[in-house]
Structures are given as C-alpha cells and as structure tokens.
Image (cartoon, rainbow, N blue to C red; front, side, top):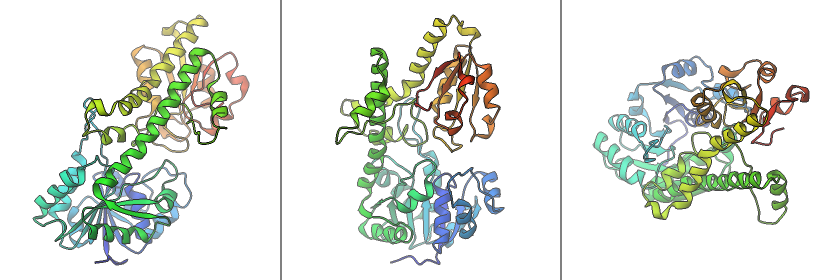
Length: 405
C-alpha cells in the first residue's frame, strides 16, 4: 500500500526536527498537522510565524507554502494515514540510560487515536532495540491493533546538523528501518517524495545502530582532538599547526579541538548506542564522553593559572564568555560548553558576563563586555568575534579554544 500525496499526515513534536520536516511534507502535497505540548509554539505556527530563529535560507518560504497547522489534540491522528514522531529522547544524567517519557507519552496518545492502515515512523534517535521493545508494544497496547497487520511501523532517524536542517533533510542519504519489509517499503515511498539522495532500506534494529553509531564516531573523533590539544598544551607546542600538518597526510582527518561538545545529539547518542552493552565492552565510547565533558574544567584550570601569572586574584577576576550557542548562527544553547564553563565560575564565585549575537538573552554590548573583562574566552566561532578590534583585546588574557581569532 502506498500513501498518496493528498493524504493527511501528522508530525508529533514541533521542534528543531519535526517543524521543518512537517513543512517539507506540506510542500510535498500532504495535508499536515503538527502536534506539540508547547502552546506558545502552537500559537506562533497557527499565526504564520516561525517558532524558532532560523538563519538558513528558504525556511520562511517553505513554511508559507506548507500550509502547516498545529494543535495539542491527538484526535487529528484519527484522520491521518501517516504519523511521524519526532520528540526528544534524553538520557538520565547519572545512569546515562535512555529516558523515553516523551516518546512513550507520544506513543500512548498516538496509539489511542490510531486508525487501521496507518504508517507510524519514528524520526527520533533511539537506542538499539527500542522499536521492538518500546514502540511496538506501546502502540499495540493503546490501539488494540497488531503491528505489521493492522498498521505499520518504521524508524527513519534524522540526519541533520545545526543551521543546515533543510539541506540535510532533503539532500542527505537516508536509512529506513522497517519493523517489517512492507513497512520499510511504505516509509521509503514517503521519503522518496523529497529526499534527493540514496534511501537504504534495512531492518529497524540496524537503523537504530547506524544512527547512534554515526554520532558516537564523531564524539570519539572530537575527544581525540581535544585530548591531543591538551597534550600539545602540556608539551608547549601548537596543536593547530600539528593538526594542519597531520591532515596533509592521505586518509587523515584530525578534527578541530574545542571547549567541549554541545547540542542535543552528540552528548546523548553515544549513551544510547551502548545502553544495552556491558561497561567492559564499551570503554572507548565512555572515555570519549568523559574527555569531552571535562573540557570546560580543563579550560578553567588554564584560565586560573593565567590569572595567577598576572597577579589577578580569582575572587576579583572578571571573565567574558563569548558565544553561548553550541554552534555559530543558531540560537540553540542545549548542552552548551559555555554554560558548563559558567557553572564552574559560579562555583568559584568568579564574576563573568556572556555574549552571543544569535541568542536573544545574550545580545548585549560586545565591546563593553570585552572592555570590562580581565580575561576573554571565545567559546563559539562567531564572525563577530573574528572581527574584534585588536586594541580591545590588548593586555587581556585570551583563551581561544576554537581557534577563532
């Protein structure tokens, strides 16, 4: 069975993934309704206003073409043949095990309003085994229907990156994991309408592993770069020069070092990948997480030494943190290394101010903050910081973990 372009579709979760995906589906011909618990977000969408700050081209036009509407009422699922779930899937801060309260809540509500013949696609990133152990049983329990017979389930994890959501949703190759082969075929037909690249059909478990492994690979690579940068610092050599020369060798791609790893995905997905694996069989992944999480503390330790060298008492020091978002030209501060750095400063009772040209709360006077500070740390590679006048930084302690300056 193939879904038709004019069929009703529902996207659960109007976040950084669900909202643009819903717009793309709307432009593809589906009659799309978004579901969200955030009433302000619903109001903005229904008023024709973007729910987030977007810097990428085309999002406004796409939104207006999509005719997207939003609600918090799951009854719209009763009329939908396609339901895509794109809700957050955090991990517990202490146990690092998946917390599926948002996913389970969405599944229960969808299941209660699920019609026969519908296709449910999980776009959220989930731990290996979640489709079989969580998605199928919850939907079957609340719908009183049988997966693979009365309705179909597939997992198509998003592959996006900050500030390139539309490009990545439409031009990146996609992996679709069907709970059954027929479900996989149906989901492939949906994504073929707007994905201009390879679409590979696998089973659901394979798709779950692929997605979590992608981001784990990147986390491990960044951890090596961060640890090598620290080793270079201890030796007194230039990490960035070493990186350039290493990368002249074929088959070498040493990542950039930085103040840590932010965003919603990379700090979380490695824990999802190894959630069902013994500690003794996942040591490298765990160590990479530990290295990246420790970066703000390492940078603070360096800052402390530099302040002491300049005879500036810690309790009297004034620090400027430049860049709060985890990536340039976005307003997303989830898991921001800057905020982790700020927690350390708070603990030490050290004064600081933060600036970010793209985050509304921190769009303050950049020159004024720099002039006020004894030390400046450039935490995000914003163009505004590259263009800082040199005289502003004169006689300042400067940390530049992203090599922005």
